[in-house]
Image 1 (spheres, chains in turn blue, green):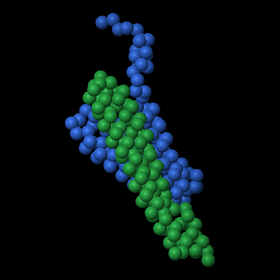
Image 2 (cartoon, each protein chain N blue to C red; image 1 turned 30 degrees about the vertical axis):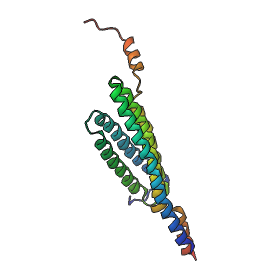
Image 3 (cartoon, rainbow over the protein chains, first blue to last red; image 1 turned 90 degrees about the horizontal axis):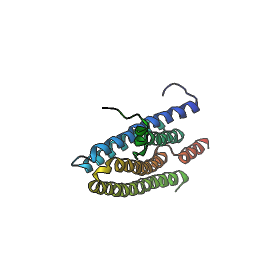
Image 4 (cartoon, chains in turn red, purple; image 1 turned 180 degrees about the vertical axis):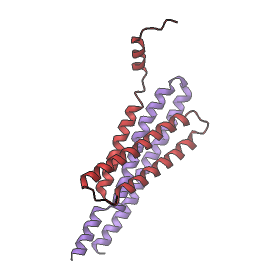
Length: 110
Length: 93
């Protein structure tokens, strides 16, 4: 970031970067879980994924911070927001709602 | 020991302790969570969607805790506000 930005804009940009990092982190966790639990070697998947995701997020936050703790905290806030967004996107685990939705549809006459 | 050295030493030590304790807890709990989930999957393969989803919610919470501790350590090492303040005071003298 060579151009002069207002402090508020810097914080917003840091938060957005944190959002992206968090999306990769928790999206990767979701992908890893679905892949690993059916694989013969879940430990390898989970450990490798955890190391890769954690290093990515930490290096990303370090680059985002630029030596300022305010930007680091803004990035962390972005990561936390991304967690709730990803949790919402992966949908509720119970199948009652989908069943209820499908029950309201007209039955297909085959 | 002057104040700058004291701030540096305490920051580094606390950052190490934060990372240590902040990864210990999540590591233990993540291991327990995954082990329990695998046991449940082995017993009830039909409920795999629900189990995976619940495990994901739990692991997301657990790994967030580790990230919080990492961020605190990074603040202490790379962007320590007290260190910057002390440096500014020394430069002002």
